[in-house]
Image (cartoon, rainbow, N blue to C red; front, side, top):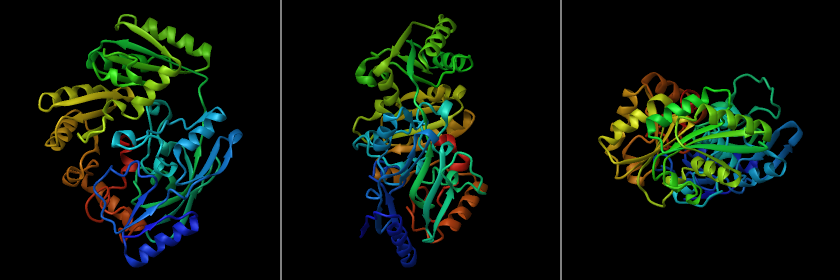
Length: 418
């Protein structure tokens, strides 16, 4: 087994072209922070992009940043913070949940997994902020898509197509993202002690108001104690984040308090504590316990999520908390998974959605569909897409689905799942 560690785009192209010529499968990794997501790899060699690193272009006034694919996300976020800017979609760090170190994700991995965080309600995901890519297909052919300006019309937007493909269509060599100014102030309003159904109603009321809530989450009893070093206490916390200029934030918080005065006890959280709360929600910190108990990530209609969880708890032991106004549900199973079929069946009964097995043992990941199975017509289209970009199935083979037909079209049709 060989590990290729390119330092330039040309070296990356050469490694993929060799693999294509030799029909030799490649596992594509950056720093490996998401290596445990997906089915176990079926690769002879590894393409390690961690040395393909560095910011190539940053123009704060133009709100544009380009970097090589292996550049650590932490390095980019630090650079942006120095200039009062951010990746507005707030990409998640999977490292701690999967038993690794924080801050090890790469900017290429951000797009490959179409990452997002609690601000997705307002800002979308990585695919909504990507401007351009340079990449190498599984054919060993280098190609580019998009550019370095916010308005760029170049035909098919392959940059967005590559989001959520998990390295099964092409290898990124560099990516260009739109960046945005960071908020001057953030304050979180917490409603304490609500049950899941009442929390769903309160979040819907807040999101339907003029308060411009940027994030809404619900941490049930005891789960709340697992964020921000326990500063919230153990009572259930329904959290609403307001961001912007100081006077505007103060006005909108006051309006929310008036709107929700009968919902339950209200608590105002600001400064570093508010930041820590949302960081830990983003990174699924309540379930980052160093264990291997299965963790699922479910995307479905916010009005149905708590009902699905209640039905699931009637048949399986499970911990849960909610982000995206309840549209994103994190589930930790208390035992290995007879629950995959049960969970997906309940999701279908409650309006449909997508379930991804994020953490599990290798044997467990090999035994169940990790990513949401596709309908036959979509699976056929996905197979054609895979055949166009990687006909020999050399890029992360088997990661998304067994065999050659990897489920890569999820990026276009199941964007809420990642």
